[in-house]
Image (cartoon, rainbow, N blue to C red):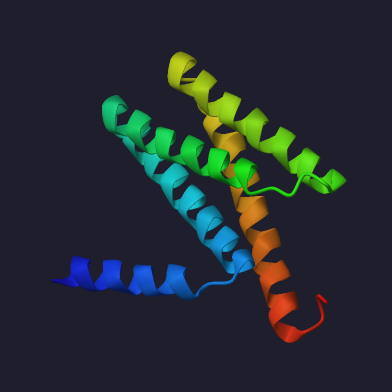
Length: 127
């Protein structure tokens, strides 16, 4: 029952979100999933960990295809997403936890940046 309520809440949240808020939701899910992958790695549950990391890689791909490439910053973001997507692929193959940690640090940084950006837009100071 609670899971159905959570899904309904998330559905409404996504349907009513601005593009900036949707990006924020993607970053939140990225951080949440990377933390879950670290937990699964520590537990030795590699199969489930890989599933979670493929979800993160899909989020990075979604972020790439939504970029407006007429702006230089979009090209820079695309390169960052591709870079960290590659890090995750390398982590899956080599299990070098540093790669996972660095990707998590990147995602946390982007999450905080987007939180600030959304707050600025909502306050009217970002226009």
